[in-house]
Image (cartoon, rainbow over all chains, first blue to last red):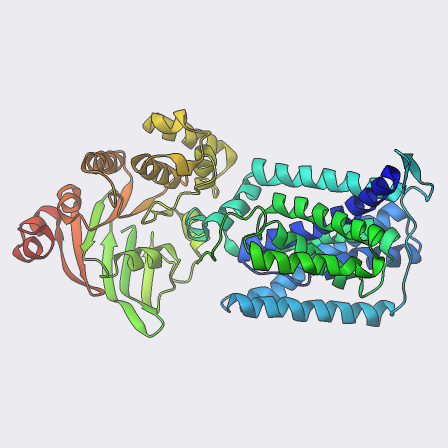
Length: 291
Length: 234
């Protein structure tokens, strides 16, 4: 009984950690620009697909992973430079629609280049489960968790201890004052997209052995990451992490105790619940739009 | 001439906020700009800082045309503004606010200027780990000014430094402005408190409905009947 619950909990935390990383990506770009980047899920797809591709051309796994993250970062930077920046005087809604267009474009490009097939990626350290309290945990789950923790700590260090990180935070709090101390808002935007693409790419590599890699993998992961971002309070990085875990665990528990057919519905019920009852999210401080 | 604008205009959409502004600020001077609410004082400062684009005319700084320069490049050149309403980074610590003020400077310069700022305003050192938003209004103004000084300005633009402060604090802020001028900083001061601003200024301009209507030395403007009537309430 308890072992069963533990089993659901572990699989929920694993997928929740991925949602958390995706949600963090949403939060970072939202803070820099108030744009909700709907291409965030495609960054996840690109991380997985590129790794599969680089391994298929004969590269060792670690090199393939590193390259995949680098390529994803460059695509994120290119998205900002060539699609968002030229339209930076447009309204936020326009920019959001551009990101939706970009996500469709990236998905289509992936289908053209790599085909529509599903690809599997070998787990980083094998498939033999580890038994924890009667629950079987895949080593990949431990990798997902470990990497997420490392990334979150690294990000906290970046935002709280480095001047560039503080500049991003400052730009989110007060864009005018940030410009007046000499922070270049375009650089901050570019950096945010690069950072979010990196998070998405890493999440995509980590989840690929569990979810498979295919051009459409980013749709659901992106939407659930978005769900985590708004449940945690848009623009609140810590909230996004906690909310990501909440979404992941609710999903796994629903799949386990009710039916896996309802698994995907959970995230959307949560979105509806947040919008109806607490639009600012669990940890959001602002109830109204900043102008 | 450190700063000169010629025929400078600025539009918000189709509404003209500034027209044909010609002002100069010389090295080491304290120049005041006074005018009523809505005259365009803040717009002028924002145009000089590169926040609002000019719709006509030019801005020269140190002999270079900077009309098209970005706001961050202007800070690097030494045009630094203390904005209206202080605009500190509220949730961040006092020290983080100051360090960000020196964003365009080298780490060594930042550490050095930080020491000077703490020497000038010991209260900021005492509160350096507190969130800046928890400081009192006067302290926040001191923080905003120190943050600007962290960028090592060659020209300091002050937008309504006395706004919303108690009279005693207003005196203190003006004393600080005078001290900065004496230490050699060039200052362009925008104020609604025309009397205090003109009293410490070398020269002054009067802005009305987006245009300069009077320009003279500080004391002469103070004695001007029109200024007295319109801004000093005498």
